[in-house]
Image 1 (cartoon, rainbow, N blue to C red):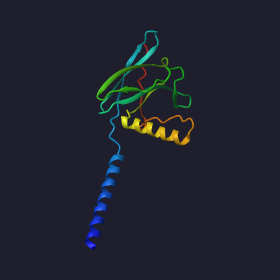
Image 2 (cartoon, rainbow, N blue to C red; image 1 turned 180 degrees about the horizontal axis):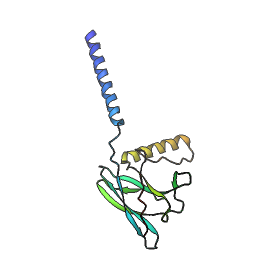
Image 3 (cartoon, rainbow, N blue to C red; image 1 turned 180 degrees about the vertical axis):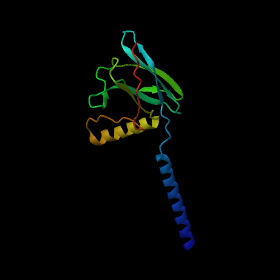
Length: 169
């Protein structure tokens, strides 16, 4: 009798350990390889405005979403979004093991600026399914207008690049 009870206890403890291990395995974040951002140079666009050219490459095994923002130095020494710059665009996807070049309008020469690139691994379909299920549950229980959730499996990270100030001829 004592042996049967002990066997059941061992089996239950084993199943509990397997369950805890599985939950822990799911909660460990994936290793993220940050995209590589490089400053390529200055040029002019078709309207004659000064633009900076950048190259971004993604060595990760999953697509990433990224959004570049030009920031200028404020009088107190911090950086803030450049108000005269182009409007912020929605995040751009970049496939796994791919590279892309993009340009951003920059302030006139002499004004200190930098490019902040925010990025994250693109959420998988499961994250979208989870967000949609959560939306429908919250709408059901609240019975009112609800703005909805945005799937984001990861936090947004940022890369900041300060291009060297070119010497004007």
